[in-house]
Length: 166
Ligand SMILES: [Zn+2]
Image (tube, rainbow, N blue to C red; front, top):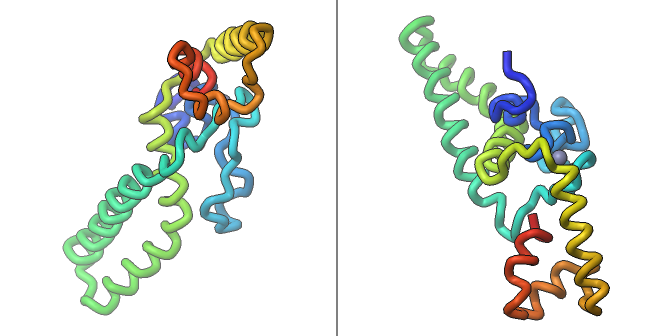
């Protein structure tokens, strides 16, 4: 089946898209806490919400997934099982309710995996970033709050920002 390094492995397994090890969600699916997500990957430290409003894209993916799933249920009950309309509507309703948490989570997982690629060298990347921070700190730049770095709008920092934001 899928193994570490495959996008589908981390999408379906709900793993961090960067290291494929850390979990995305704090609580198991059956607890029905839709958005109970870690802020950062517990293993490599990747910030999951890449920027404010980042999850809007996931919402649209969720619409697509859920309408696809409901359409399949409708076609199977209508064409294969030949149920009558009230039963079909009940089946669609049950699917929608049960699928909601899973769908919410799957769409975020898929969205994150589209935006962030697997990087088996995340350890080195983190070390490089830390080194960069040290260098900046030595120059007297406040790098502890990456937001303050961004808000400074200092020209030379653009490339550094990129390293730190990931
Ligand atoms: Zn990770």
